[in-house]
Amino acid sequence: MKQAAHSIDQAVNSAERHLAAIAVSRGIGIGRIAFLDGEKRQFFRIDLEPSQIDAEISRLRQAVAESIRQLSELAANRDPDKHRSISDIFGVHLLIIEESSFIEKIETVIQDIAVNAEWAIKTVSNRYLKQQGSVPGDHFREKYLDIEDVADRLLTSLNGSRPAVHLTEPDAVIVVHELRPSAIMELAKSKPAAVITERGGWTSHASILAREFALPMVTGIHDLEQVLLQRDLVIVDGINGQVIVNPNHETIASFRAVIADNGLAVFLPEGSNKGTLTRDGTEIVIRANIDLPDAYNMAEKLGARGIGLYRSESLITLPGVIPTEDEQFAAYRKIAGIAGDAGVRIRTFDIGLDLAGGNRSTERNPSLGLRAIRLSLSDSAHFRTQIRAILRAAASHKIDIVLPMITGVAEIVRSKDIIKEERELLVNAGISVGDPGIGAMIEVPSAVFTVREIAGQADFLCLGTNDLVQYLLAVDRDNDAVAEWYQTLHPAVIRAIGDVLAACKDAGITVSVCGEMAGSPFYVPLLLGLGARELSVHVNAVRQIRHLVSGITIQKTIDIVDKIRTLETADHIENALREYYLQHWSGLFPTGLLDSKHR
Image 1 (tube, rainbow, N blue to C red):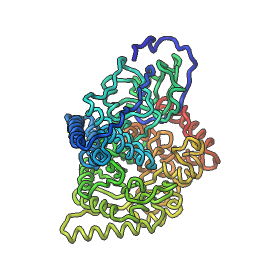
Image 2: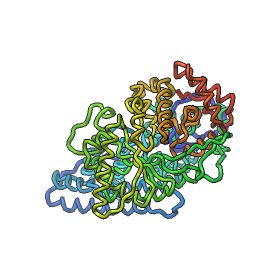
Image 3: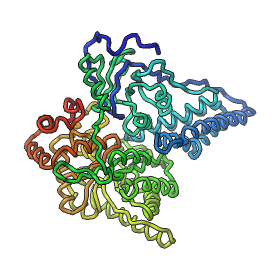
Image 4: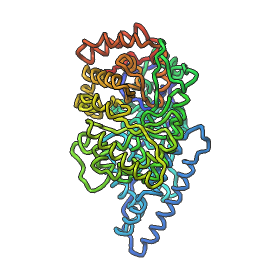
């Protein structure tokens, strides 16, 4: 990439444009666009003679050994207080090579079809990518990048060269359709200002590493080559989720002021393990949602108290490869040990048929099919394995169980019966077990309507706002064509949340609100006014949410709810909230947040 021909401070010739995006790594970056070449390697197929097959397998194994050496170096944890997620992510890549059937299948292709190692790698990886890419949910669809990254590393090792991303100019804004974890590692050395991608969600490994390196990153901008040009000056707003193209001098100055303040609230109360108090003395418990255990170290420093939601499906690295009981036991014990007395809530596998494996055909509508608790109860072998691992880990640590996608009381009763049976079997075998609390995810309409009965069977509830909005409004939140109808502030959504919170209060059990609503300052006052007293948020939201909560009073949040109860549309509710915030708490919100669309 050529050196900058114009500085950021030189005159802007084109009109300022704002592009909506999804923030996946918080922060703000200002720089000029540099497109990253995303073309994949291509190789010819070479048909081998039978006498050449053993030599080709030996060649592959040498490449595997070199890849393992590289990954072991990347996964080594030299500093226990920094970049622990790097170790976890490249540890996953090691598992793909060492403990899955990935390499074995490549060798089988070489042997059975008599082709070169490059062709065999692409043949096998493409099978995985096709299967993985069809899985519903960003969390799993994005994991194909790990497989692709491992395949590319093997191909590079076969040809004796190392992949690299070279930038000659620091503070560039990198634009790429999709980013692999290894590319983030290379990019970080050049200290770019920010990253813009077309695809990639919050849980992708590239996004996790971007957060680890404090690299602002947004995603979800389509037709990148049409809306952005090489050398365009842009502001990447990883706080509010937008890209500002050709910003004027006033816009640049205002965002530089935010950067000077680190783009985040500077308030960090002492005694982070004592919760967060509103101005009128009400305690609000802030927990962290995590996929990688060591992310909790940072969350705790920022003031989180316990892990409100550990997505156990993050342990599944390849479709159909469910971790063994001992592997899960070790993982749960590790994460519980990190959380300590504050505890961890482990959600049982929230997966569908594509991740579970087996010979069953792919469903036409997986979001409404055999998934989550339904799959666990219909295929109870995997569920029982997971329950045993959790019970064993709970013997010496504070662990609770969360059951996903509960639709009614019957599923909780059946799950509790299985838990009881597995506990008795372990005890009879002389194995120590714990007594975890049993919670239920409330995220579908039937659970909202039967929440009082569910609350009578559960020790606590988790209110999953993302899926609740999706299922309540019948809107696919990943479908751009219907994005206008995905309305978090729809009156039905607000009423449903209020009903759940009220039912839990009457039942005397806690309810933790999670999802984007809990982690966004715009929605938090509304949640508190509806009765929420526990929020479970992503790590990067902890400090900002605590800052906001510490500056408001419960009475004023109740006033907000009273003001919007009679409003009939999401737009009217959003405008009323914005007006109230500007009048009472404008200084508590990040710059630009109240100017963005939030409905």
